[in-house]
Image 1 (spheres, rainbow over the protein chains, first blue to last red):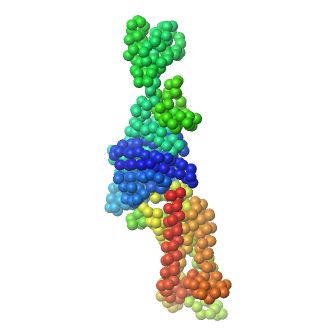
Image 2 (image 1 turned 45 degrees about the vertical axis):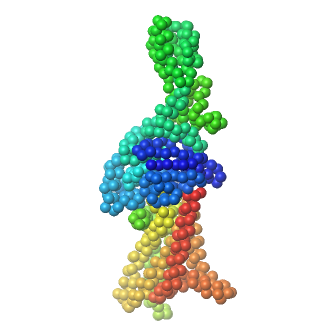
Image 3 (image 1 turned 90 degrees about the vertical axis):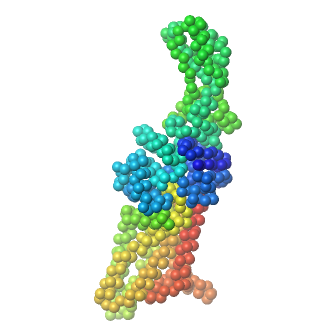
Length: 335
Length: 245
């Protein structure tokens, strides 16, 4: 439905986006995740034909954006990052304007506008001037404007930025509901958002795609060193040594204290330690209180991939750089 | 075509929800009303030579200088505001070409310029009530105003495509408009007769003089139309240049 091939863009010789290729299938929500300044907006502007790519091509619904812009853009609804509406216009006027702009036939305009206003829950402010609306409402009015002509592809650049938590939840729900009618490409710098809303995630950093996949595969890529927390009843001094001797265990360390024994086990790549730990505990007659696999959160993946300090490593080995200490519990990209 | 109409409509009506629009409307009415009053007053004096009042109304330089300013102000926000706020992004990612956007914005502003003259229709009505009025020259005078207004507004459109700052756009527009206005006057300072003839085709006051006397010369119309097209073409290229940046 939407395809980008080898997209590159430089501004006055400085590369902003380098060789970005991806496809979005019909009915899919693809998340474009990256820190601020990673090239998300530039990429989206090339996809929507607002910027001409230095190299590469984009097809929207099988039409080349550079060659046949007017035809390609018929299939496109775009919500720019800097949401600029006309503050003096009323909501209904504005959405009708967008419908006419996209060539919705005159007799259908009213029905299309009503539908868009309903979908985005802005019916109640239909006759309010946009300048008087809160940011959350304006965002939804922008969205209504983007989808009023029922485009096949929706491109949403940071749709939840600047909203309060309740509005964020609302807009996210809205986007999920839209998947039935549209193919969606969405950009965000907030990881939980990508994880919640998207079927597939592309992580972009300094203009390059550094990882892609479903939230699960991304997490899996990073959880190559699975770790397990074991809690035993009472004080068991020899526990660390016993667990360390198990096959597949690369390290064991005592965590916490007082009343029970807690051990954090690091496993070798691709192993599941839980079964062997359980059998060992049973044969030794210990009482098992807890056996928890610790998953690398997607946050860990993200932070690792885009951490600016690890420049060289990230460039040479995208996505496979689990440090010796296991997944870092970084929270640098919290919303 | 539908998109064109939608942009023209939005552009035209946006003047009526901004204080600037009303400021321009009122000040223009004040100035043109005052000019009309002075002319009528002059008719009363026995020293005044015989004249067609509306013709003088159309051609007096004082009013034209004011119109240049007004045109620059009407046009200054056309593309600057869109580019500054970012709403140009919505326009250009809609299935609309840059040329359509430019042409529609120009048309919207030009319609507002024409709208300024609607209330002045009362002047010839008044005159016809109290004396003879030759309708032909009045109509061709309005045609001249419309054409030269188009030229001014198109220059202003181009200025607004070059910058994101309205003040800069207004000043640039005024310079371009003033330039197009006085280039014809420069003819009097040229030593070459050939160049003099060429420049006289560009003399806007001379055009207006013709129009106000009822002479509709296609060469003059052609000059204005081609200049308008030229400025709109430049504006389109300026917009496209942003894209390839």
